[in-house]
Amino acid sequence: MLILGLETSCDETGVALFDTERGLLAHALFSQVDIHVEYGGVVPELASRDHVRKTLPLIEEVINDAGITAAEIEGVAYTAGPGLVGALMVGATLARSLAWGWGVPALGVHHMEGHLLAPMLEEERPDFPFIALLVSGGHTQLVRVDGIGRYRLLGESLDDAAGEAFDKTAKMLGLPYPGGPHIARLAQQGEPGRFDFPRPMVNRPGLDFSFSGLKTFTLNTVEACRQNGELSEQERCDIARAFEDAVVATLVIKCRRALQQENLHTLVMAGGVSANANLRAELKRALAKEQAQVFYPAPMFCTDNGAMIAYAGAQRLLAGQVDGAETRVRPRWPM
Ligand code: KG4
Ligand code: ZN
Image (spheres, rainbow, N blue to C red):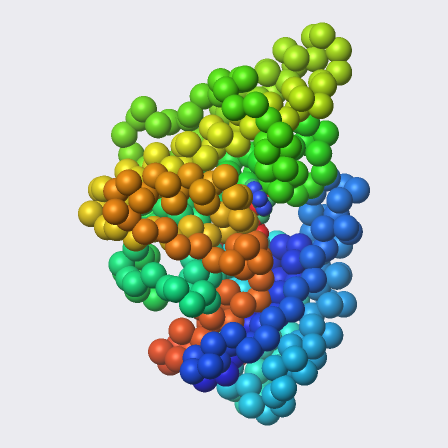
């Protein structure tokens, strides 16, 4: 089954063609980062307008790249939520119109299900059941996955998402949005242990997270350093390092705890923050000690993309799931 997937939930326009027999045929992405950078965050109206401009040309591009004709497409999947309502509407309306014109089914996909299944696009794929750590700009969740659509939430952030904490810390250090990759770059030059940041909630039982205290601790550290004038380059690197180490340690502890609790040995990590090299290395190291395996998407499929939506939609359409003719999006949609 050949499926076109569209992702327009936030500030990336992602389009892909996935075939359940042949795998990923083509994918294209346009990132709006340059449009939003001067505002320090995503401006919803500008995001919607740019999705309107970019989505159709990207669809044309993937059809050409895959060397197929539109007549071969057997279904259209799109992100129906969670996300920015206007941005979601662009993808949903376009997807449903194309599907209607082509006489094929259309299906709205949960954005986090897309992230969670993104490691399935790799050659080496995890077997069900597994634990998924979803870490993005809007979510930090631990989920038990028993199969497609069989998800049980084990724990989540009670306040800021991990990616949001990276973005806010970046802002404090005068780095542009989105801050995650910038923090990671500074952290590489940072001296480990120069600042000792707390590991939030690790001493409490359970699998929930909290990152707002860490954010306050970072702010206090930045202000304490500023007492002696502007932050030096080395101080910025050391703070970035301490912050990143604290987030990584917290996530690693909770992942191990989730695997033990559910008596599982496979972990999948996905979402924008899973692109973080330090997090990937530390998780791999920690889990190897416990004979557990960790799977993650290729870095380009960690952040928002159309391939994960095409994949998730293909699995559901293959199982016969379809939506009615009405275009519906769900800006807030628990998984
Ligand atoms: O999944 P994603 O692309 O969009 C959402 O669904 O939110 O995640 C974006 C988030 C941002 O907060 C960004 O700062 C973070 O992922 N991120 C990173 C890295 N790359 C992206 N955080 C830490 N290290 C990275 N290398
Ligand atoms: Zn995302």
